[in-house]
Amino acid sequence: MSTRAEYRKREESITLAPLEEQIASSQVSGGGNVELLTLNIGPHHPATHGVLRLLVTLEGEVVRDLKPIIGYVHTGIEKTAEDKAYWKVIPIVERMDYLSYYFNAMAFCGAVETLLECEVPKRAQYLRVIHLELNRIMSHLVWLGTSALDLGAMSMFWYCFREREMILDLFEQSSGQRMHTRYFQVGGVMEDIPRGFEEKLREFIKIMPGRVDQYNDLLKRNEILLQRLRGTCPLDESTLLALGVTGPLLRAAGNPWDLRKAAPYTSYEDFSFKIPVGTVGDNYDRYAVRVAEIYESVKIIEQALDGLPEGPHITEDRKIALPPRHELATSMEALIHHFKLVTEGFRVPEGEVYYPIESPRGELGCFVRSDGSAKPARVHMRDPSFVNLQATAAMTRGCYIADLIATLAMLDPILGGIDR
Amino acid sequence: MPDQVGLELLAQQLGEAIPGSVLETTFAHGQAAVRVAPASVRTVLAQLRQAHGFRALMSVHGVDYYPHEPRLGVHYELLDMERVDRLTVKLRVGVAEAVVESVTADWPTANHQEREVYDMFGVHFDGHPDLRRILMPEDYEGHPQRRDFPIGGEPVLFTYNDATSPGWTR
Image (cartoon, rainbow over all chains, first blue to last red; front, side, top):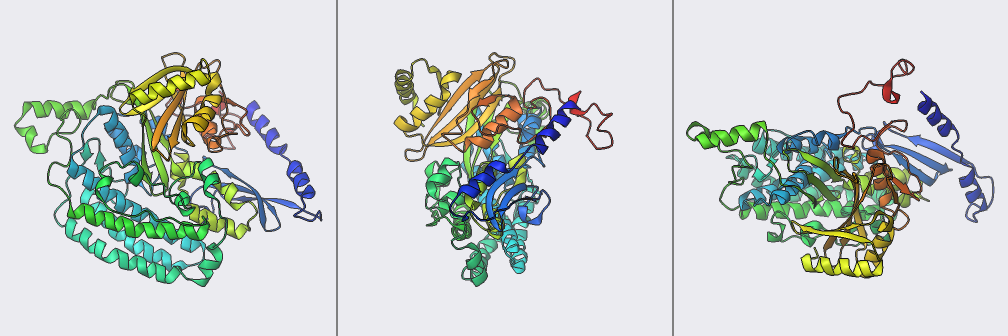
């Protein structure tokens, strides 16, 4: 009780006096009658892309300060992961950033594989690349649809979700699930792609660039979109770097930093693709970079499918991966391995590792500490949305509140990833 | 990544620039890490930025090494974008004296991440501009990511049971 009362007291003691003084003394406002208004946006607001609450200090329509308040969908995933065997952690971490579940699983599996020093077969790496890039397109499509919706373009939402549906169908075909697929396993992927997957994927590869052309026809030179996005809320590269911002937001400001190129993982070095960059780092660049990334992802998928090597889809190390089903009927050893893996799980040698990958939103790093047991002693995700969110205030200070909504859309925060 | 030799060289130079700062170096799985004295972390990070090119701080996260002492750890993941080099700076503090100097003034990105470490592990960051809980409710008691934090559910606070439920304030 006492702490609650204290909290209320603190809450009531918040005053805007220092900020008012600051504005009254500044030359910009002309020293006239300035009234500050604190506006609460969210946590339940369609334009906040999740359960994000913003405390915005306004002077008229101009944003003077902004404080993001988060934690509304904190589910303690990192804590839960400490109580699960390594392979059972995968479906849990997938639910952090719910639009890029393959990336979450990839970061975690990559970290555990590094600790195990386990070699992932080439075919599994290519299958991972295919699914990661499909997931990147899917994530960008959701972003494009909902962002366009924020800017008043309703039909974009339906077009984007139409293509997203094709991707989800592909996910369903390869793993049985449309979302949170648990397809990536430590040491490889759960199953090889089924018959018919390749034809369907080829069809998708053929259709998708044309569809992105259509989006561009609708939006790229759209008068309303240009007025809403071009030149609004720019932020330069050095400020972005100081704030730790990565991904499309950083690339929009002209820095071609992409971990797929800079420090390739999972065979990204085998593919030729370009890194789209912007010039001034305004909202329009942020939009253009993401749309251009869809074309590049399609290119990567096509190359990975063409060059898909033969071989196993998961490591042959029976101490890590389950034996094939048919072996269980004939081999005692396979039965023992199966039993050990399903009951206790595999043990991971002691150590700490930080494994960064390029998610659709920036650097997604997974830190795993192992104490030698079958459960991780600590799992931490450096989620790009969590870090990028800090840039909102820097981006929108001095902008109109309408531009704040557009900036938030272009920031593409996923609250499941922020709160974890 | 600096290789093993590079890491030793770097630790040597760091130790000369800031005496007594480097406690230990580890090189495992191709990843380099230095363990530094908690009191010197801010100067060490500044030195690594100025003299060694690690201009980006990618992640700050906490670890609980229970049952080992000192229990709490804070890790700083540094990145050099030009040479594509990574370095982890680690420090360890005990639960009783869990105070570390904040690096938010030098690296604005650490702001939310230090708040998260404070929230989850109870490490206080001296000089942080706004050290409040970030993910847990403001009036929550305890630091849930610590290994000895009891798990197994807690009563949900509603307005009607605010007075009767022991809640978080047990």
